[in-house]
Image 1: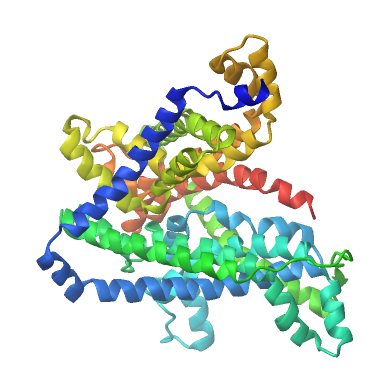
Image 2 (image 1 turned 30 degrees about the horizontal axis):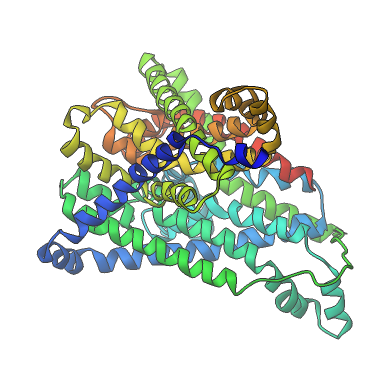
Length: 528
């Protein structure tokens, strides 16, 4: 009886999952079709004028940001796990706050700080002379600085978790065999941390190659920025599709390389003896250096930008800039984000249910196919929907329905990552008991399953809501005329260097994101 009930899923759920998977993969297939049928003249022109520069810039940015996040993330994780110094617990969780700062917000703040006559240049000139100059924000160095400060928490969090679960017996054995502390770190500790570090760096690289907001404000030519320029400025959809296909192939190539590297970096605990690392108290000078280092990274990545946003917001408030239009931007953002997150939950519930309750090959493939929308960077997914809607349903063109569809397509995988584990933690025996008492599939889902997974589904809704609040490239390309959100206003005002006008929108997004970031990582902190 139990086996029969467990596998007796309605055929409509399987059909629904198959339909959603097909729709999710349609934009990627359409972009590939447009790119492959673009014609030799389009590809030849792009290769002669754009592709080499974009490959070099995107690759250089990914490589430089990876090096920066590796240095910051691993060193900070090592400090907070292995050593005890003043305010260690405070720095331990505040170093995650840069995740609440969208890249385009950090980019426009550093455009002001690093610009000609900006505060950092003035400080530098007091040391090096009145004619001294620092690197401009609109450069590879500027983009690297912004992206590194925004993404190093990915490496920091995973490295910290790896170090907390590290068995120090391995280090003790190496030192007993005569290895120095430095050699032990490079030959034992670092190799055992390598899978976690590689996972963090993979998140960083995928984030960098798909980012639009920071590179667009810093005028640094990467594939995502070039795709947006082709669509919005030149209206060349064929060239945009060709560049989009190259970007997707670049991301897939990296994912395959990362998976291969991770498979070759497997390490296992082969002994029952386990000793957790103990923190060592630093001497006064070491404690001062550690505190200064953590404070400097926090100030550069979150503290100073947040203080400037608050300062500019107060100035804008004093000048009466927060009028009814600003309330309209808030309403638009909340309406779009709430509608998209709610629709994604409604669509994702049947997908997660069939993937966890009947993980057949078809259902697993359908679940994985939905992730095609996450592979597509914002401008690429927006381009696909733009062209598809203009051909298939032109009466929807320029409406918020297309924008909501873009949000759901791109961020539904984020919600599934929280919904599926929540369903996996509910034993099917409870559902089988409800079915034996006369409840149908819909009644069992409504009365038994959903109340038990409510916490996980709320977390999924919050994650997708916050992602939609910060989303920029698809909103720029697909929004109705005059329908601006907080993210769009930040980009428009910051592009014209109206820092005070952009600050209230930026500060509101950061303020809304911080509690969710701390809530989502709170389980990690309780392990400390």
